[in-house]
Image (cartoon, rainbow, N blue to C red; front, side, top):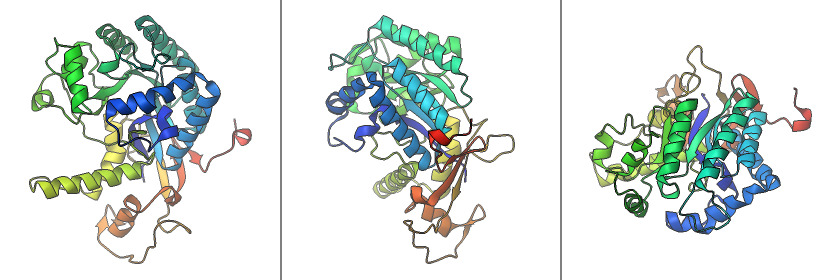
Length: 359
C-alpha cells in the first residue's frame, strides 16, 4: 500500500504524548508544552526525542511527516538531519513566537525569531537533503505579533516555502485572537492579511471556522484530512488517526442522519493521497501513479504474533483486495503488520543501525 502522510505532528512533544489531555488547550500549553519545549536547547535531549519520534512514525508507516520543532534553530536543524538519516520525507519547521508565553525562558523577540528563521532556512537548504525541506512556522496567531506574521509571510513568499500553523482549535483561542487583532474580520483573515494563506499552507484543526470563513476569498481551498497531532493526539500512528476519524464520523451520523459516515476507502485516501494533496506534495507521493516516488508499505495482515486473528478470509473486494484484509489493517492493525517501509525507493524499515549504514 502507499505510505501514509502525517500532515501535522509536533516532534518536540513526543516525550509526553498522552499527558494532560483533560486540560483545555491554553492550560495544556502552559503546563506541559512550553516547559518541555524549552528543554530542546539541550541538543542531547533533542537528539534523544527526535530520534525516537522519527523511528516511531516510520515504523508505523508514516513515510511523509510535517513536523513542528521548537524555537531552537540548532535543534530544528538536528531534527532535519535525523529525518534525512532515517530516510523519511519531511517538512520541518522552526517554531516562531514573540509574545503571549507564560514561560519566561521559552520565548524570542521579533528580531530573534525573524533572524533565526532565516538562518534555519539557509542552513537547511544548504544541506541539500533530497527529501527534507523547511516550512515557515508561526505557532499560531496568539503567540505572534502582527509584525512577525507579516515578516514570516514575506520570508515564505521570497523563498517559495510551505507554511504551517494552527487555527480555530477552541473557542477561547478564537476569542483571544479577535481581541489581539480587532482589525481582522475573522481568525482566518488574520493569516490572510499577512500573506500566510497560500496553496502551500497547512492550517491545523479549523474546528470553529465560520461559514463565512469557509466561503470567503481568504480561504482558497479547504482540504479535510487528519493527522496524528502528537502530543495533542496521544499516538504517533496514522492508523490510530484513521480509527478516530471513523469513530467521530459514526458519532456525527448518529447525532444527525444527514451526515454520511466515512467509508474505509475515504479514510484510506485521506491518510495517503489526501495528505500529500494537503501538503502540495501529490506530484511526488500519495499513490502509485507512474512517475511518483515509490513511498510504500509492505503489509502482512497475518504476521505471527500480530494483533489480528484472521478467521474469515472471504468477502467483497475493495480495489482488488478482500474487504476483510483491508478493514483488518485499518481497525485492529498496528506497526507489527507493517513489515517493510520504503521511501523514494529506499527500504528504511527494518531500521539499519547508524554504524552499519551504507553510505
